[in-house]
Length: 105
Image (cartoon, rainbow, N blue to C red; front, side):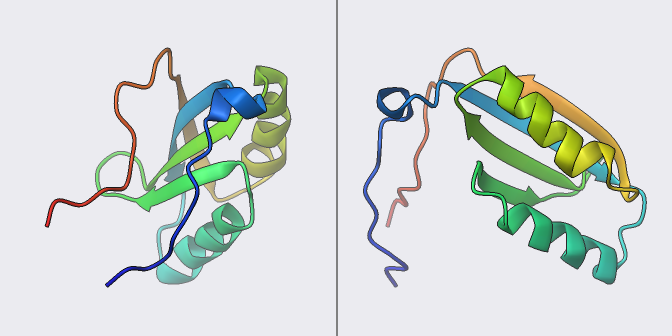
């Protein structure tokens, strides 16, 4: 039932003051292409969470970084060079009201 034990680090104390919520829309959503996108997202340590979703977006990413300049570089590497990315919509968090993984049992 317990998947793992983790330490919760305060992002600001380690310099990660930028939190981004990023919507990704793919051109091709067949299994092979979505699996390829998942592999890419899993390989990027700055992506804290990744959700495959329904609706206008295909994935929602939660990314934490030290600077917006880092996001500009990550954006170029991940999204601008990937021909299967149809669209990227980025939201910058101005405050974290509630975060966590706790489950009510």
